Length: 88
Image (cartoon, rainbow, N blue to C red; front, side, top):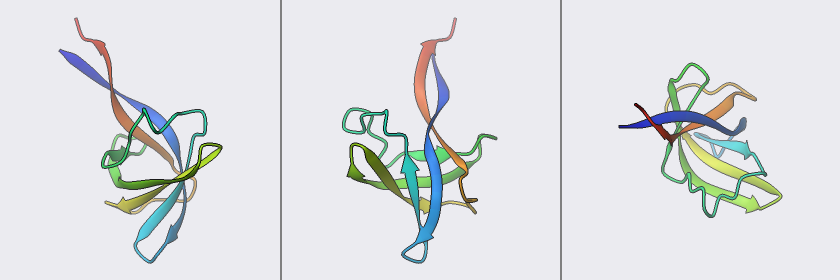
């Protein structure tokens, strides 16, 4: 059985374009291989808070455009589920 874990990918920045959120992403990750477009993001409590619509910007300052699923606070950490080690 594959275990899922939450990995922090950035933090929310501000609401833009009316109903979308601009989020600053961690520049240490390569978002061409670690694709988060279409994935659901979670807060630290594990509650689904947004869906990633697109990753924009350059590799040194990546941002994501999010569709909120619930209220997102400013500078709230954003986490995505990734496959971890197999559970024994």
